[in-house]
Image (cartoon, rainbow, N blue to C red; front, side, top):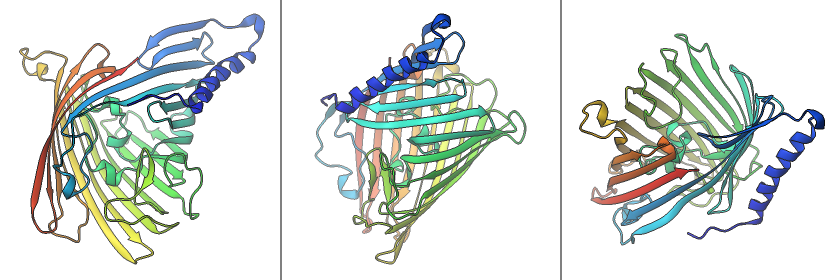
Length: 403
């Protein structure tokens, strides 16, 4: 994949330089605070001694080999085709974030260099733990699998239910926070009002906004971060149970990093054609090198033009473990992880099941998820409406490194 430098990249780099210079123009030239520079788990960090300004900058590369192809099949006919082996730079990211003027006034943006896409840009006001505000564009806080960074997953990529159920990146605002931390009623909440039209779209097509709510109960008063593997080796059981819901009316039935689109079997929509309602139940926990996460999804799509309703459902179950915790025979950097996923594109049909079985081996170099090699075997099993089964096996190797 060829990397191109677009005018947007120059604009972003100029904005970064402008942010730094203008920030320090606000400071008395005689009492310029000392700038501390160090390398952290977010890349290179620049911070003033008074902690009024902080900036971190990081680059990330993801190299991938896959055979007989890389993309997850989306229909029966794609399960086992004549795809050729693939070697590519799957992701090439530039990430910049920090805070300005106050430690609780934060900012972040992320750019995909290989495709020329501005993925994230947001400002966060986080003065109080129980009430925070986010404005801009980001991956919607709906389900765990999508929110976890692709560099912090246990398998090479997300499951086959990500495509039909993810809300992906949207523009808008969000209220979020954590209440009663450390108690038996420890909760996180997220409530978002979004355009509901996908990445880089700043206006709604029909006047109906997307509303998203997520409520997460932190078991035993301990919060679990958005990461796939138990690299921290939790000595105490740490877990969560979360529920989420969304309603949206637009011309799309699905979203991705590319923006709005259509699920298989749906025509290109017009403004306000599809009313979508979704709900999700999620569990996750970690304990002494073992990690678990799963999600159950349901989705209803009502087509206003054709007066038709389609119901979808799906779920995945995923677990990982560092085998060295069981026997010293296994090296400490090695983790094994597995996942089972099922997806029903239309619950009105009896023979309408898609399945995915995944097995992965992670080798963590120095830096954990920041420098990781993953080997994965995936088996697909698709059934069409005639009851005929087709299946296929895929092999992938990926090196993900953040600098």
